[in-house]
Image 1: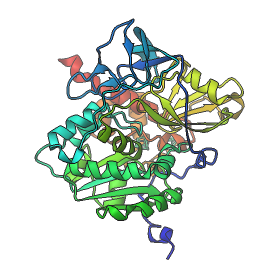
Image 2 (image 1 turned 30 degrees about the horizontal axis):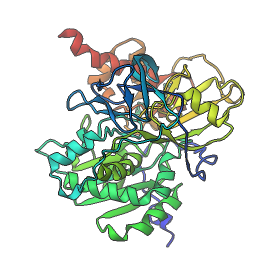
Image 3 (image 1 turned 180 degrees about the horizontal axis):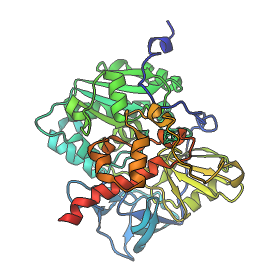
Image 4 (image 1 turned 30 degrees about the vertical axis):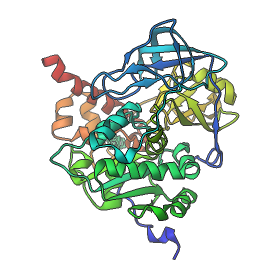
Length: 449
Ligand code: SF4
Ligand code: SF4
């Protein structure tokens, strides 16, 4: 029987089917990008407290050296992505909008020279606490876009136990092919990283979930998996947003994460392919995260591909390397559904950035900027994978009635997939409304304190 038929019905209800637009990069092997003359390395590339700089202007740094320390448990260190000299520590623009402190490194011609003192580590000999510390020391965060510190995700509250590590190989956003290429080209590191994290969690099994538009990756993993008897690989339907943690857990294991809850409450931790693959390389060699694979594509790009990019590389340098047509007036970091549009070419590539999409003026399909009244068509309700009512939420948001959005209509279960905005015939920017509402609600306790 065809393997596709076996898993044909493995998907979730609602969501949307999007054109995947991956044809320009899915066959492109990962290529290394050379070093920019200056790297902009923000101290906050992750969810949590920004790292604290431990270098000063004029100081020489070597590739891989710690240049900023974690500021507490909910933070990670930052390592020098290249050898060079610290030019300054200044405020720079980020993809999220506000400027943030960044270490500017002027790179040397020998920028790839590495720090010499990396002692290999026998991961199997580490205690649970030592392994969590080792993960934090790599500076690893969720490379799928979330930027949540990986060691925090592995530190499950003691009253819960984890039986399953879910490895998220869905890469359901259109255009992106980073995880796809890693599964094909770094299969051994992926399986090694999976095995290490299973040990860290005490999980008895791992399931790698892959959308069925990447069956070559499915087959590559299958062919390497024989020595890893507790790791399985499963194909799921290509269906947006299949890569959401809660939906993937439901599809692969039939378990329902409670509203407002976390995967560990149902015995599961989910990690993204890129995160695990990088850990599979970094942990045994005791090194920090200094580069990542980024899909660079879109109608404005001359040389679309999957590039291994030093962290801190400015978008301007990356675009000069890949070439672009038109005036590249529409840039997105991440995927088109959940990524962030960027206005400045000085914004650098940071840890959570999996893609740079470039669209020129002619190709941006913008029918209208006009927002029309809700016509109660319920398309958003049919699309929402969390079974929320985006129409009512949108009406409350437009009146700034944020409390009932959270208390009565479960706003916090919205993970901003964008399905509702995508299908809305009235062009209502629902997901933007929800982002604003959530940030206002998160700020409220601090204002009251
Ligand atoms: S953005 Fe939120 S409300 Fe809209 S479809 Fe996605 S989960 Fe539902
Ligand atoms: S899709 Fe748009 S117009 Fe239709 S019910 Fe939802 S918000 Fe209203």
